[in-house]
Image (cartoon, rainbow, N blue to C red; front, side, top):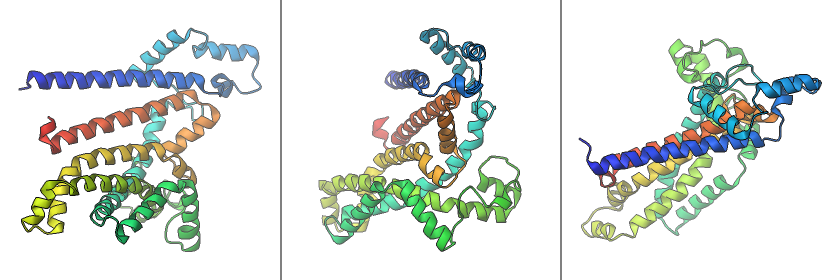
Length: 339
């Protein structure tokens, strides 16, 4: 049974989420109206007559006051109507459902690589503070954080695809495999495994590994620096000294005591890094011709597809809210004192 304090906490959290979503909707609407592209011209074309232009202008509701336009937009969003894409002619939500699995597949493997590298490296850097291991790891992290990912993407393609031939090139798989696997989940690795098409699975994995590794390296730089900072705070605590005096080894002290105390903070860091990957995959998807959410957003932004851009911006915001909520839940699971 929920206590009064717990009930108030949940109500406060629900209220915060509702206000945040409303603010996000207002922001999305403002962005849509401030776009330099003319959505009417994008539909009717440059050669359309003024009568045709005004007819579409009125059909889109752009002749109404902004307040009325916002409430119409709010009504449509609440009923699940995000409009139709000018570029594809399909409902925007259908387009996003089609392209989002490609980005999720890319970002999920990237965050596994990023956290798998960043957390151990951060711990080692903290334990070996001011030694050569620490300096090397900090240089690697700084390089990952500083180098433009579109530049590293092109260099990596040149080396690992064009020269060495170790990985696949652009796209999600080789052209001759396209269409062989029926879409079930739109996650190509899962669909290929379900269909038993292991050649397609291998081709998809070969095309995925390079962009995911670059994104993972980029996110590992941030995770490494944060892990090092958190771990240094713990190493300087008295309980670590006490554990060492009692005879525990450095490894036992770090992984059994200090690491347990930073895992909650790491959950938040990894969740935020995952959200940033979903949002920031635009450049890497462009370099690798990856048919995902980032490329969809970029393509529609170029032609001023207002419905698609507004929905994409809204979705990114919702993803960040969901990840923050998930990290908060995990925070409470790992640390009962915060319940």
